[in-house]
Image 1 (cartoon, rainbow, N blue to C red):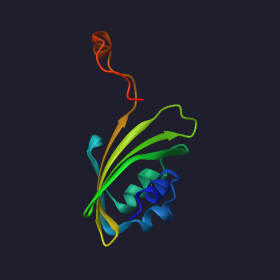
Image 2 (cartoon, rainbow, N blue to C red; image 1 turned 60 degrees about the horizontal axis):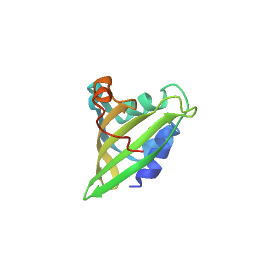
Image 3 (tube, rainbow, N blue to C red; image 1 turned 120 degrees about the vertical axis):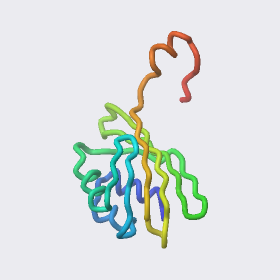
Length: 122
């Protein structure tokens, strides 16, 4: 499975293309909000999410039947951004299970700024 083509379909909110990547019995877990979706529900949650989106895969690792990806996601106006970490289990070159963790990008909390610890990654 091509993780870059999959992410492109997701960001474009292209229902037909997204569906091609999934095994019919697949499920998707969004752990940060404690939700499990069928393929149809995942497509609704993704494709009906408001706005127009863009992003990029920042890292992808493959081992056996598992793909781990990190994607930066943002609206086309780049007013905010998020990172999504996905653990994607593959069966017969299709997604059979996906566990995703989403986080808002932002500044470190004030207490760490006050301690003057850490530095910017980029």
